[in-house]
Image (cartoon, rainbow, N blue to C red; front, side, top):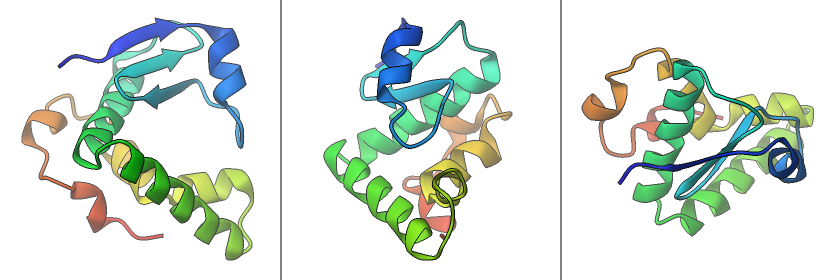
Length: 113
């Protein structure tokens, strides 16, 4: 299933609770402030795959958990965001346009907080 893309600066800003983001993925939607580059779309599509394999709610529980670990380690909200394994996987592979088709199941587990 292809993600449903919504371009809405207002919604994106409202959902940027902890840090200001250009796009956010809430399965099956990718909500962006503006038209996305191929790299950003690929990044958010990696999150779609992560959410799918994490049955959506489990993904969000882990996402907040990992962010909280970063905060507990004394990181800023932004620094903690970049330490989340889901984000590490997406940033490490968002320039590889074939990544999703070659991605191993739960590949985010290779990345540590």
